[in-house]
Length: 233
Image (cartoon, rainbow, N blue to C red):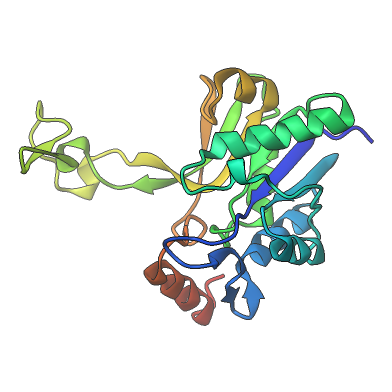
């Protein structure tokens, strides 16, 4: 079998916002297990799903949940300031060294988005099969207008768009999109060429608020637990 899709699940040890969040138990399971389960259930044809981690403990958990752990990530790719692209590029370099070719597609699935479903993963792969699409990015809608989004200038609020009257009604404005961090999929050639998850022909895969939840703080964790308690996931 020639591997077409390399799925990378990044999970370094430690965390400043929420200590060891990637293996913290959410509803009795390590956080990274939620993403691993979605990957396994998605069963993307001709794919290889790997856990990129710097921790042997995380590696053991990853293998138990069905992910391949072919290496421990070097410390140079594990610090707080290391860019996501550097980690995915390291995984691509490993793959090319081992298999002798580039996978057609690379997918990035952060464990901090536990409610991204198997269906979302499959849908993204289907979307990128279009020749007019080089990348698919998970997004959520922001029901705000640029006239009601502000930057601080000399301590004062200045709208991003001050050429129009302020639009305060939800019905008056077109939703904006922002990446939710839950899913990135890119054709490998474009990813490595542009060194970005956003090559020119990038399209959104819009996800709802629950699917878009990105756990980074205690408050986020409490929201995740509330969703589960209410039977919303």
